[in-house]
Image (cartoon, rainbow, N blue to C red; front, side):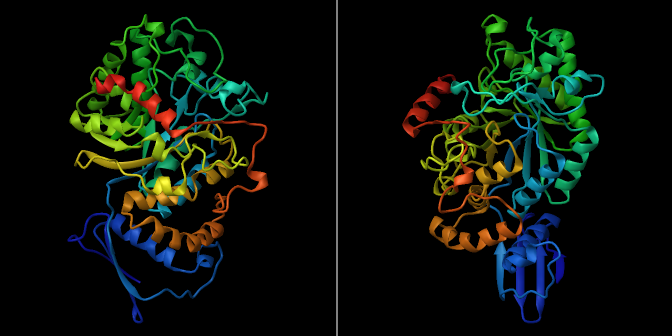
Amino acid sequence: MIQRLDPSLPADGYILDISGSGIDLAGGSPSGIFYGTQTLRQLMPAAALRSGAAGPWEVPCGRIADSPRYEWRGVMLDVARHYMPVADVLRFIDLAAFHKLNVLHLHLTDDQGWRMEVPGWPRLTTVGSWRTSTMLGSRQHALFDGRPHGGYYTADDLREIVAFAASRHVTVVPEVDMPGHMQAAIAAYPSLGNGFEGPVRTSWGISSHVLNMAPATLDFCRAVLDHLCDIFPSPLIGIGGDECPVEEWGGDKTVQPRFTAQMAAHLAGRGRRVFGWDEILAGGAPPDAVIAAWRGPFPTAAAVAGGFQVVACPDISTYLDYRQSDDPLEPTPVGTQLTLADVYAFTPGVDSDLVLGGQANIWTEHMESARRVDYMAYPRLCAFAEAVWGPVTFEDFSTRLDPHLTRLDALGVNYRPLTGPRPWDARPDAPGNPRTLPDRLTELAEMTADLRA
């Protein structure tokens, strides 16, 4: 196969020519060559994807000229609620890259676990990285498994993840959620909080325990961000900023915007920009922030109206922890129903150069293993990857999906069968909380009332 760069092509674009005399692949950049290679892999028999498989392999002749619709084709992986070993994270990246996704948003910390070591702060891992028990199912059922859960990544672990992703043209955008979703850190260092002295949170949901704004606490936050900057070359660093209760601040809603501005200024000194959930728009986000718009479709439009670059990830279209059907065997059915067709229909809903693209989010409260992540992500992530690359029609996608599932079989992916869940997919010990779309849309309108005002 001949591979060559062609600067006249889009950076991520490629032209793949297959004829009886050979294969010629031109890419607008090394990433374009990589994506063309993924297309070639998908044209081969599924058996070619198995380790140890031996060719030669036949591929159909033809010419494919292709380039993506969006610059940001992302997937978020929450490793805070359930720790995922390094090998499983690398496999997750490899599968995402095979589908031409190019951003991994890595959610590293939350109330239920802190997953990275930080120099000078050892209790973040000795205390904050594990909890005494884990909830089974949605929080209103108040069921717990009684088993400790934990784990964290060393600096070398994270560097390996970054290097592995870079070799597949995937940018890892790290996130340490602050100033809310911080109970694990406060459990390790109570001086960071507002009087709370207790364990890492074992319940799902949002902790009321947030950071205080003392100079020492702000220095802690800067030290964490410096450590992220030292490991991750991403131009964006995630600081979360979502779902932050204000009760411990006496109800003062101006605290968080001031905090966010200080962290943004610190990151700017390191040549980086803030990446935050759409809550940071309230009260005024830093002018160069990039917004992850998740609370339904409206915040994407709000971010664009405010002149901010935005990544659209509305929960009702892209949250892959949401249930896939009304089948009673679906494991821990939560959220609104999000079918394969629903995911394929994703669109940012706003036509603007400020829209960088889209992102699917995988929150792992109810995904205790890589096998469960597979089930919830695939094949819906296949549909999402095509939606942000450049969809044709769902009917055409459906025709091509059956042979693609044989590739997932060859890659060992525990995807959800198109016929529905199998008996062993069910989790009767972890009951869910299904929602209707009208109910959720009403709730989202209330949640974003501040942005609408």
